[in-house]
Length: 473
Image 1 (cartoon, one colour):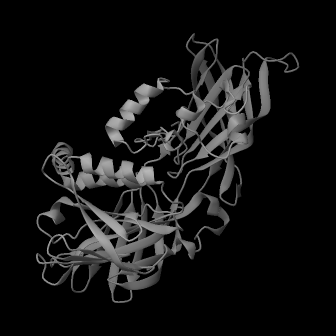
Image 2 (tube, rainbow, N blue to C red; image 1 turned 135 degrees about the horizontal axis):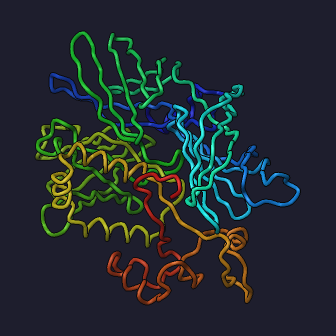
Image 3 (tube, rainbow, N blue to C red; image 1 turned 30 degrees about the vertical axis):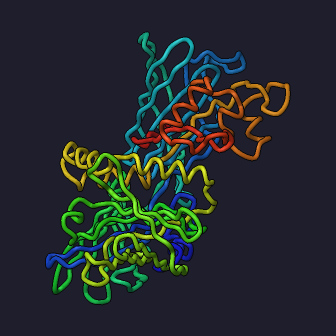
């Protein structure tokens, strides 16, 4: 699994359903019952959310409706916004006049729904009455029941929902790297509360891998001579682009760093210049500067002469360290390169450096570990926040604003369609937050020093981290 992630060369085990599956790479290490460990990585396919708009038949008696709909009954095909989730449920949002309806069905056919209008609000209750025919991996099922508003009024309701039916069992190819050897293996998968892959290595070693609803990875192996577990995290990297950083965690046998899952963060600061940010118990986080002595597609050699000579060899599986405090060259961290399909601006590198050096990482991290019940749980949080949690920017597309380049007004969506990039509030002078630009400059100076001084164009665009992976953002 050297070089680019193998997702580029893997074929989906669901060829008719490729839009809902994605090859995901997890990298880490294995640890056996004899206190031996080694590098490990696997690329496998995971279900992903699918969002689409589909005409859907809805029958709703009792809604206020045009005269041509006899009997005060809506029976129409409406454009419905669907979200088929990676967990097998279906969510549907529809709009009629002033009524907004939202319904969900899980993989066990459990139905729930609610509606709101200017006049009232209430809930939908329905059960599966007609199961449709399967076309590929989609099926239209009829759910029939009633609506009930807060005034106690009720009437008939039904909806013909499109649902995505992912096969619960099957076979798939997984790409595995184990101790420097690459394998392409056939695995059995089971999709339920978790996604489970089971396969065997040619050397009589049986493996079980599990990915839970939150995307957290776990795995075990058993052979004739030993048994153990896999520890791995999702690879957060662009599929193409240059090497801009290297992320990893301390090898498990290092004391005490292996037990705490100490993070390794090497960033390329410029041509031939790398910087390692390290956890520190003092008032300020530390860093070490390295110069690049040689570089290839899958390996970069670094040297720091300020500590009596420290050599670091970065690869796609490990960071090897040679120094006065090691026994020759030792695998210090398990991890991999981070690729980026676009260069960072110089001011962004300065801001990154300022943030990393001002964090009191070790103190806050140890406190978090105690609060969460141990470093294992903290590492799950770090993996989610750092690698997988969606970053969202909320935009009111129908909001009318002044055109940033002309003396006219138009909707934000029209500005997006005309422009070639997303602009900061310093350029547009409009937004949903504080419009006092001097106040905002002072806040950003407190966080990132002078990184953005006289550089309003490249100031940060603000959004939010969807910590709970809420479908509505």
